[in-house]
Image (cartoon, rainbow, N blue to C red):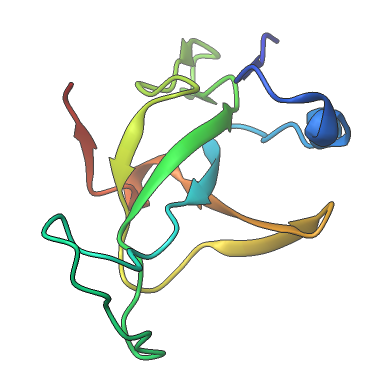
Length: 111
């Protein structure tokens, strides 16, 4: 099994202990905007959810009934659109990450 993990700063080296299994993906949600492009300060709205994130690590993929491995189509560093609800919350090193199944990810943002 091969795992892929994004290059992490030294302060987050302990995060490498989290290896998603099967078709699961570890995602760091994007921080909410505090200021618009025009410089307008945006108030925090607790009801608004962040629908974008960055893939931190991916599992090796699932297996078919015949044992053939189906790899995950995302890789670390990809920007993705996330569903409003779902994912398993993981807290480590005062940071919050989420683990999603690959089919739960809505889209990949192309650069």
